[in-house]
Length: 440
Image (cartoon, rainbow, N blue to C red; front, side, top):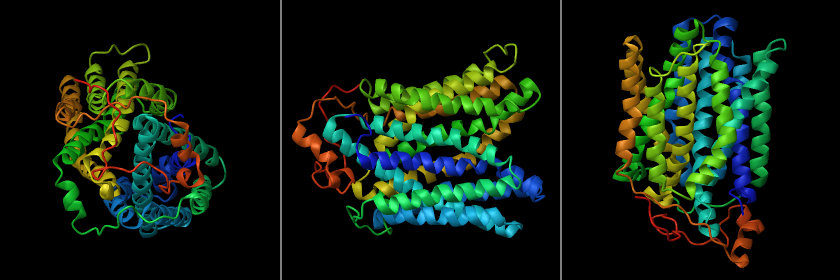
């Protein structure tokens, strides 16, 4: 069986694709709409975009807690409904107050459905690993690749719609249609089932954050997100310094998305069978660090873009190694009943770190180039060193599973993720490991 053959996993993966198509058909053009279409000043545009980011990343922990309390289905459906309302409101919003209300609503919608879908994907990936021996990282890599494909296709859809009269409104309405389809699909196909454990939010976050390995993973992941955020901070400055404009940025972002779509699955297939999640995490962070270190050392080339291209390629390769590994470690570090909360907390804690880290790295823009890039390289490199203290996990050894067992995942109940017939999970949600020597 391949990494995503069960209908439920295909639903979750397709969901991520659709989420990003609908989202990225609108978001890249929001700032231009606010400035050119509504006449907002630069600082006000920044405030609106910042509020959107905070209402999403900063509130992921709420979506995760609600998922643990009520199960993923109602949280996903509520998030889709709010995103439909938010995009519909944004299509007609004409004042500062209404625009802020619309973007906060769209951000909070993602804070609901993203942790629900991501934690459910992680849970099903572990179950699939238990049943088939297929490393969970493969399922999570397919999930990431679907998201990147959506991030690539969404702006293309939005750019076509912008050719119409009142194109931004058309893009918003296209987003409404996409999320309406997602809502309908999940209302029909997502299983009606109670959460494995009904937990109250009170005390749950404290229990999750009291787990030192999980806190360490949050710290390590924060280093990655601070580095990744440089695609929107340091990379534009580098491109403008090299070429005199930021025209080439779009091509570099397209290159990053295409790399993920084309390389993510074979790279994860290669690494998941050979190295532990910790090794993949450390290697990915070291690759990201190498991308920053390479910028002042790479010749400019005829177009002046070789340093920026090397940064994008190495950062993307590092991301493809470390993100599935980091997400795959979360179920091993927290109890199953707290998996949704932990998934949300990983994003929220890391997002808060990015807020502080972005201010510090932004101050480096005026520093000499060698110092700036060396300091930026030190961030993921420090994360790689810290990651060495994480539990290694283990690469799953692929074994042929008896037909009587594998057929469970193809039954209507098992395929829809009801848990019927699935192997029992251990109390700490550590998967049953296929014995294989751990990576040193």
